[in-house]
Length: 304
Length: 284
Image (cartoon, rainbow over all chains, first blue to last red; front, side, top):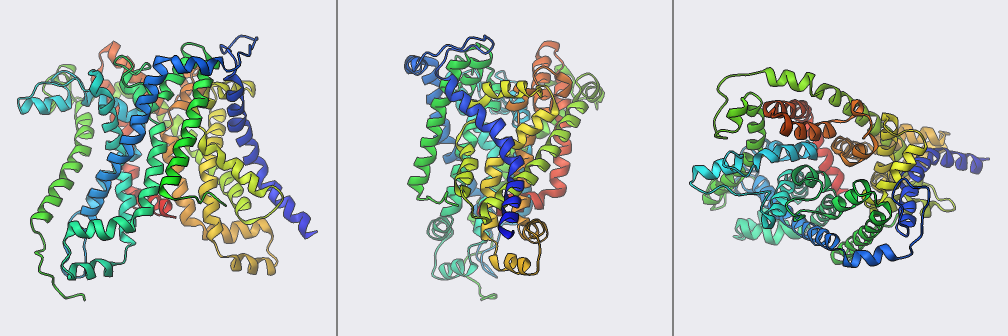
């Protein structure tokens, strides 16, 4: 009887989430894998299987490779830059106040800085995108170029120079993301026992030394978590690129990333089969990224 | 230890530099936002003039236009409805699934856990095309109900992953005691486990609110045919495109300001919870 009651409880608690998840998440994914083997256009009732043709085409598709390269760059640069800036700012906030009195202290006004830094995180990405259209305007009336003009510098085509556009977009992602990681790392730093710093400071270690010898090693786990979050965030670049650089990743596809290419192939060019093949490729890349990240950082604990 | 002084001055060169670095980053954050806010009071010519100048007069007409003709109010209401229902649903179903998978052993329990967590590995873009047709088939295309259900479904993998880890750390002794006292499974869950898991629940709630508030891609595909149901992110993107044609730039920046201000107020009121919630959550 007790056993039966337990099973009833388990089944009751799982029924709705399992159904929702299966219908709206798993079944579309399963269909995507299936569709990647077809040349379906999204409306025709005939679905023709073409085997691995779509994947063969991917190998020679220049747009796909361009998107892949940009995506790889994003995946590497975004976490690196964000984490370095966030660690630096978090360290200044928490320990920049010197080692006087009762151990290490935060810098004056650190609560205020934290509130400001974190704020962009709560803004929707699409809103941030529209905001930065004005900031990046290529003529000298753009916000950045207006400031540059004050120093007598020529206006820069932040979003229209092919070599610069993707970097400008990454800068926006960093702008938005840093605050979250400052808070994350601050929490990590607060958890480090104060005695460590006091002992080291008494031994004559400077602040730079304190950072590299105490803070950083003890913060390893937190940094690792941050790295994984940012890796996931890199895949969410879609909204920002679409708003800032348009559907095709202007200029001349210099900013196109895989999600943009997939969205267009499916909904603008009606090549659902081919888009699904790109999606499947992206899936394997994600998995590779995840496995590599977990391997190189030694976190194997996805176990229940 | 408390009164001992080291030979370091309280605010040396490094301390000063810290302040400079922090102030520079703060300025970088505030400047674009402040500029947007000011631009909503400017005229078209002022917006295209020197970006560092203040508006010549306090014009409020753009705010009116953004609210009336650009439907910002409607988009905001839609977003609030969808995010509130979506997050509430995610929390209810996510915590139920996570709890059962974390604390009950039954045939296939481990497999089911992986089944949920596997969703983390799939990029949403892969599902996009088929998802459109699935939602269409169940007759929920261009409806808020459909969007809410999809939000819940896509928030489940991370929510379950996160909360399962949290529920697992809770002491078994308390649950055991409740069972001996004759509490049912549901009661143990609601009155003992949920209160104990509160820090985790708060973190993941904030995480989901932010994620769903930010969502752009899913409504773009699932609400494409019903402009009166659009959410803010879609609305802003559309207003931005229209501003190019109609040359109503003050209207665009007023719309942006109207979008940003309530978020800013909520953020300032709850910033402590938001920050500590997300920080603590990520460290678990």
